[in-house]
Image 1: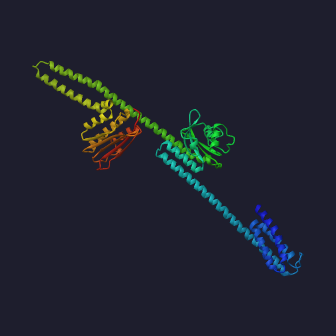
Image 2 (image 1 turned 45 degrees about the horizontal axis):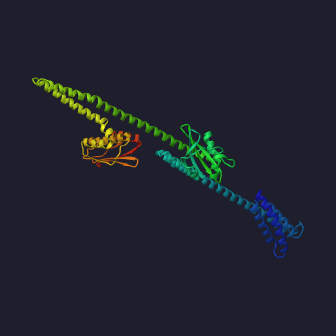
Image 3 (image 1 turned 180 degrees about the vertical axis):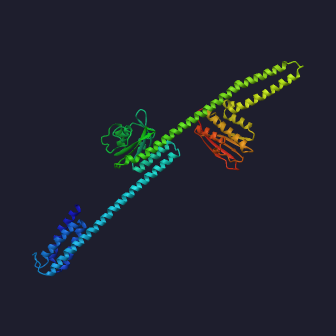
Length: 497
């Protein structure tokens, strides 16, 4: 309607002005020239207003030509048949030109509309591609078991980028109803630093998402009051959206995004759902890993405690009784008459076998759990182990303090098992052991010059070493290329003694 109105106005203004001008030039321009000028006005009206105003302008132009420029002048009658033909031709050409111009204009507008639609589609595809790329980056972090803090930070950054938010925040719901900031990006970090506690209140979208467990949004904070209202005003937020984070059916927290200038599109809350699902997966994985690690640690600790009890029972019970029995035999042998040499020999043989059994029991007891490890610490225990090993062992112990019992036990058995594998399977001429403390880690390096080829998946004792190390949150790397010896690198996080 606006186009038609504009075309009509142009016709109503230009046609009278053109008529007035041509009446003054009647002696200069002939009828074909006058018709051509009126035809140009019809084309102009068609370009602006479309077909209907152009047809009306063509009819009006024909009437003006007949009245002012075709004899007899100032009369609707036409004396010459040639003028009638010319006027009819003008109407036909005007109508045809109007149709062609209107059709071309329509095609142009269709092309513009299609171009806009294509541009919008390309923009939607670009936004979707950016969103999928962001989800893949976060999913990669989750899949490789990245720490929860790293996942939170990445999600806050990616959500802010994908949604075009001025600030993004992830909060954990605490038992008292308040929240703890787990990650923030954009405008939020200075106002709400990670680790700070905050209680979102209505009408904040975060408060609604935490209360209902459903996505929420708020596009008007003009009536926000209280601490939350002050926070919104300091952040200069105009709109915000939020989505809950659910971990294995329970509300864990929420993620929110805020904008300072524009409102978020209507589907923003749904687009956040993919990120909240990844956060929930990361949290569930982290909890499962923590539970698994704690379970393995409990198993290892229970096994170590059992070893320690067996060693103590053998040392304080069975071994002492055998020693006492040996002393009794020696005393009985000393009291025998000298004229019983065969009995002397038999008792001496029994006492000697008993001494051998005591020594074997002492060795077994030491292998179960060396008493020197509990009494003297890791350094003396490893030195004793190195002296007893069948191959030369070069030990460098660069730690000067005692460590927590689980750490010392794990380190001792890692070295013990590694040396046992070297002696049995390498075979190696020598081994080199380095023990040192680096910041909050106890680092072990066990190397030999054997034949190599050891692999934890091959069913060797390295599997037990890996389980023991990982149960304490440590890491173990095995480099055992055939013909190049074996190197085992272990890092154990230190615990309070």
